[in-house]
Image (tube, rainbow, N blue to C red):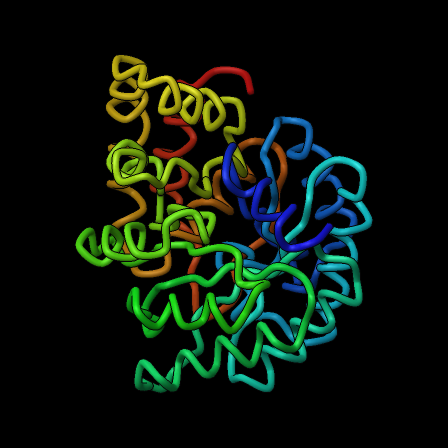
Length: 303
């Protein structure tokens, strides 16, 4: 799959990022991960991001990363394209990128570098180095310390033909509009704010109809129903699901930093696909929060 073919795939449909399965000791659980991917793939997501933010990329060892990406690629080879999360320092991100390409990933999601602040030019140089280290398509994730402007993204687009996507995790509408207007159809644009469904209608109006869903991990049917309601502008259905599920869901998610990942793992366990605990520094939901989430999921009916 060349970068332009991947760009076409990412320009429509629902995307998601499976959680990474760990056993009770916190080690990668390959069998559980295969089971998860086999369950989720037929629901119709356009692409899946392996070892992304919700896949706890930030906590993975390099040896685990290789096994996770290979497992995802092999399991989903005939069903759905796999994009691999990459990040960290520039040299580390390049090593991950080249390993993911070697293992057969169709593209990369370039997560923000970590810890240190950096100038716009420095971040752009980081992105360019990663893009030029591989031939597969790259999606840049503007979030946290990665806050590239429209002019710099335009420069990167000129220098890096395989930079084919922009994922927004900032929620800066002025910046999003400037990027969308300046870059036009050069990129595939993805909504990437935590619990993206809450922002989906607003982002569709901005010309960003595609987003990645975390709740696809445990209520995939509801996630697809919501995406299709957004696509056909079925405001009644969108409003009902937001009121019945997403607003009370956000009430739980917002109680602690890091719960955007923890609540998804809890949901997977409730759905019968236990992915094990989150890794430090994240913490799992408290028992009463888990029960509240279970009640919300139960109201969504069979998936």
